[in-house]
Image 1: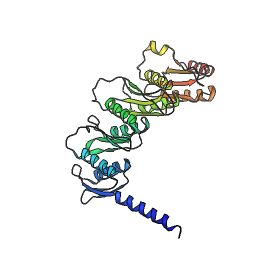
Image 2: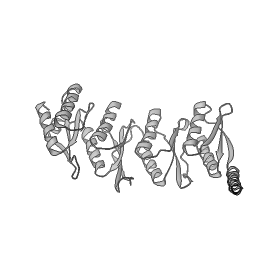
Image 3: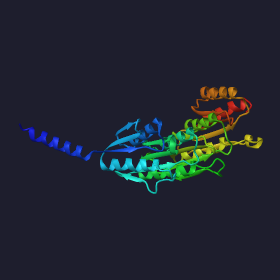
Image 4: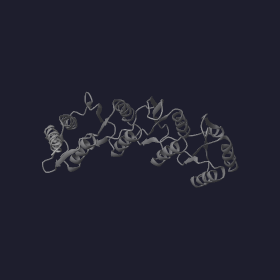
Length: 324
């Protein structure tokens, strides 16, 4: 019998919770398709409003939740259903989170919009993000600081194909370091999609940059975030790879020093060999010089590596013996 008051209290709390959870149904007009309906449902769920259902026959979405969650869903659908393609005047705030919508006016291709979503996840570390194809819109829910970073990325990446662009960077506090840098590095010399992927792999393998992704554009770009000094090394690697080297540039030594690192010397070589021979050279350097941080970019014919001075000297000797 002693448990009865506790059971009654739990039932009372459950009744209050149920009473606070209400429902609202929204009719969609802009994109009367099943895919558009499913994207709206996924968007609302991505923003942590979990009780959402759809009726394709009526093109309606029903949301159940707290007053704040219903207000968020109403705000989101109102913005996405508007025929005026302009960003919301102000973000929606819920539980100290900022909800933002970015309408990408210069990103018509689906692959480019998917890349922007992946950049927000990978580089800006925003996990609650999804797109709405009919409006070329990307919606996020995150902290105020991350939302500001996302806005900066949207401004830099959503540009006209013929826009005059340059390397852009911003200081941003990362979780694992006091001083972090986010950089959007636009290519001066366009490459293939494989070439873009090779640059990303170089930054990961040689520069130890993990938060990095491609932007196919046009204009093409590599976007990354890292602590200093790794970010400066990544920027240097990018600048060396984004070249069409003349004979004099090929003859020069391209070296970057990172004191207090277990692999303090980075080198970039411009090779004359074909891809197959260059890949064989990379394999030889890995096995003989024991250099794990090494990668070859086929589009730019650049070999990048990073190691201790003695191992770099061995790699350099192997490259010189191969006539490079």
